[in-house]
Amino acid sequence: MDIVKKIRAKAEDWRKTHPGMSSPWDAHSLDKQDPKDKTIWLNPGNQQHLNCGWMTAEDLQDWLDGKPGRVIKSQEHWDELLFMCKSGMACLIGYDLEYFNLFPTEYLLHPGQRLQDGETIRVGTGLPSKLMLAAKKYEYPKMNPVLIRMVEGHTKWMVRDYFRSQVSQGVDPYDLRTSRNLDEEIYGFFYCLQVQGCGPRTGYCNTPAVRENFSWWKDLLKREALWELWIEKGLAYEPWVKNKKSLFSRIEGRDD
Image (cartoon, rainbow, N blue to C red):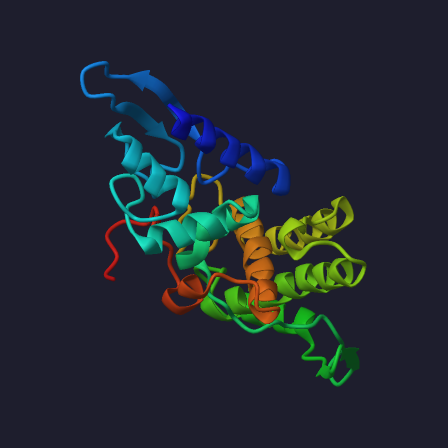
């Protein structure tokens, strides 16, 4: 069918524009034809947003044109898929949205020290001493709500400061990645927390609610910092900003 060739060409054009990404028209199977009714068996990629099944040429044309129908589940699904296929980080952010606390950024400065940050002057809050006081405030658990807020705020500051410098040098905001030096700085920050007895504890069953899975938490905060930068620059997917969740969220058992 000509429509199959058109879909494959459309997918290839998307990948040329967005290197390394899947396209909204990717398919695991699009070549098995039923000789009786001329339908095509479609097993698409991105099946959180697209349906599989025996499709007519008209069904496939709707998919090619981005029209909801038998392939595209809804306009909302299609819009979300287009955004996700722009950037690999968009997919990861979509999975993590409901875990983001979105606490304000904290700056690692001495109390009263001032720092010019773009158009804003930041005043130091004495974060190192505050962290230890927060850790000692509770005997158990050490990773208490006050400490979590401070750790998240400071980690995001490190990441966002680096990302902003990269954007100022012309890096596409959708292609931002942390550097090895930054990753080592974040690792050292969390290692200091660990040796202070803040976690993780051997044999502890880590969950996102308590933020004691340090490996997971560090990666989460990198993505949250990137998400906040996208919001700041008007590049974020608006329904995710509004709803704080994606259509394909893997979190179960939460109220809408």
